[in-house]
Each structure stands twice: as C-alpha cells, then as structure tokens.
Length: 340
Image 1 (cartoon, rainbow, N blue to C red):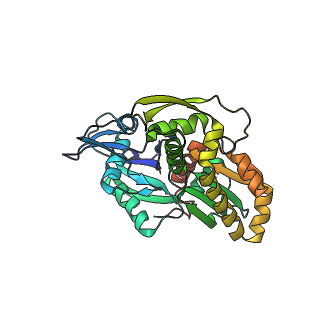
Image 2 (image 1 turned 90 degrees about the vertical axis):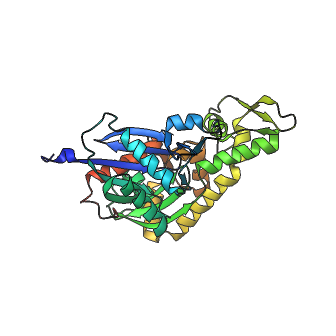
Image 3 (image 1 turned 135 degrees about the vertical axis):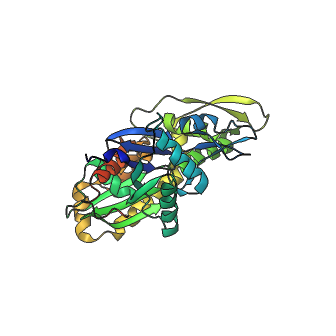
C-alpha cells in the first residue's frame, strides 16, 4: 500500500445482464440485480438494485424500471451509467471529502463488438473510472474456478449468464476458440412465460417466471431429487381473474427444451472448432460450467450425455466470474490478456 493509496479505489465489476457484482478489498461488497428505477419526467434515479427490482412490473406512469443491459451488452447508455454510479456509491455509503479515482476491471462477453466494448468503457469512465481494463467473461470464469489459464493445457469453459452463454476453449492465457450465443437465463425466463400463456392460459410477469425457474427449473424430465410442484399465481386469460395453478419440473423441462438444445448445438460447434491437441486435453479435463444458468437442475448431466465428456459445475457458479475478475484486478501487470 502506497502513501497515496487512499486516493485510488480498486474495484472489479461483473456487469451482468441479470446481476451486477463488485469486489473491493478482496470482498464482494455489492451483489445486486442489474436494474434501475427512474423518474420518467426528470430522469432522476429513484432506486437501484434490489430496491428497483421490487418495483419491477409494479410501477405507475411516473416511474419506469430499466434493465440497462440486454444480451450481455449495454442497451441503455444513460441508465447503465446511473446504475454503475449507484452501485459504486454502495461500496462506501458514508460521505467523503473527495471522491477517489477508480481503477476498474470489468468483464465483458467474448462475442462483443468494438462498438459494444466502447459503450462499456465509456459508461465506466463517466461513472468515475480513471483506469479501465476489460476481461472476457470465460477467461474470468476460468480464473475464478481455479484453472491456471497460462498453462499450455486446453480447458473448456461454459458460462451461462443472464443474457449470453459463453463457450470458450482457453490455453496459454488466451481464448483459442469461442462461441457466444444470446440464449441464457433471460431466454429461459421468457420461455416459461410463453409456456404458461400457451399451455395454462395464465399470464405471469417476468419476476414470477424467474421464481418458477429457480424453484422447479430443470433441463431434463428425469432428474434426481425432483422438487415439489410449485404454486403459480397469475391472471387467467379467459376470465381476467387472478388464479393459482401448480407446475412441476417436468413441465418446465419441456418449456426450456428448445433453448437448451441451442446451447448444446453451440457447445458441439465450439468442440468442432477446437484444435486436435486441445481436444485431447478437454477429453481428459472435461467441461467446466459457471454462471447462474449452470445451476439449472440436470443441465450438467444433459450436456455430459450430449458430449460424452465429464462436466464439472464450479463451486458457487454465480460468483466464479467476479472471483476471477477480482484476481485479475490484483494481477493487472501480470495478465497480458487484460484489455486497456
């Protein structure tokens, strides 16, 4: 720690479509949904994170809730800036005499374009970032899982987040081949909404669909220890009256089947592009799953049956990416793959 270290604050940010996490001083200090509530008339920030999430789908005409990220990239520049500022304020809520300059490492999807990369960098700089580094999500996930990414050994990482599923083969501190598809947690949620409308004539909101996914979501119809049926409340499309129905994990497995099949197809494509020496390594090491989507019941088993390879889920998959980003923050000089 230098004499003027208090003038600079070092933070690692996992700017996710569903959740944003921030590490400061080796601790996860912010873990909030990526959403803001804004006053429609003045554009003023009303709430950020969990407080804004409680308002989502329940607002009157003067308040709107915005999810600034769609498919892993910034869709609303102004709201993203408000969100990053609001979440950085959560790190030290007490008033300071001055604002320290920020050194940030932010993770981004591997399939991102230069324009989208620029949007992330600009949002971070407008929110007070003096030094901004970017790291690809699969690379951060690999570091967070505990893989030595600089070894001459191939490792396959699948990071299923809220907006994108990132599939990458990593060796020698770089991504050898990658596939990024915009099918992930958000797509699963909209599949459940659609299924409820089509199959049960019941209209449910995004938050209810998310709850169903967590409580009874499954990737296969036959899973070990299936959860009990879950009570869903929504509006009957025939009568317009609120009603309750029960859904099972088998139904949800059918609802999510097409989306999971597309993720499987992307995994097979990535394996086809992999150089033969690295394929030999992956046969030995298997596939690593990270991200919130990897917690879907039976997903590891389904991918294993499809690829005939062992599949390992990271411990605490939700935080694998932010853990890796935090390690990258401490080793900015050591890791050449960080983008300035």
